Image 1: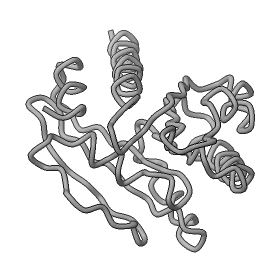
Image 2: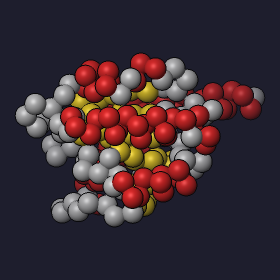
Image 3: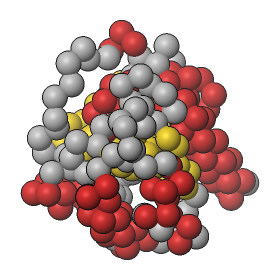
Length: 192
């Protein structure tokens, strides 16, 4: 049973959830998405995403559409075309790539200031990935370098992860599930 199966079970909803998976190239986005899929749907070999790929899979109660967006510089301008459809964002950071932490922060700032994201209370899950790499920055240090404490208008959470082993992913999925459940309950209360 994949982590998205568990998320679907907890939510108990029959709906489609669009999750945008963003981050710089080589941060581990595709590996994380692969780990989140049901085990029988996981790929054995992971190759870098060129442009973007859309992964669709169903669980008993949810239909997931995950947009795995390439983090290569020439493709990052494509991200914004999917912001309106996104109900949650997973932003993956390579914690061992200290040199490009500034670039990751710039891309995050661009995302947060985009008109299709800026005024929405969309949950953002940060995976500080590659914790298995020697000298990787802690999730606290990554949070400080990205100035996450400045995000006041959106729920966010950061998890230290090792996507190759699947470590830390469950914590993030649990948090995201809570956010999606709260959002759904708030929407139902507003309609009542």
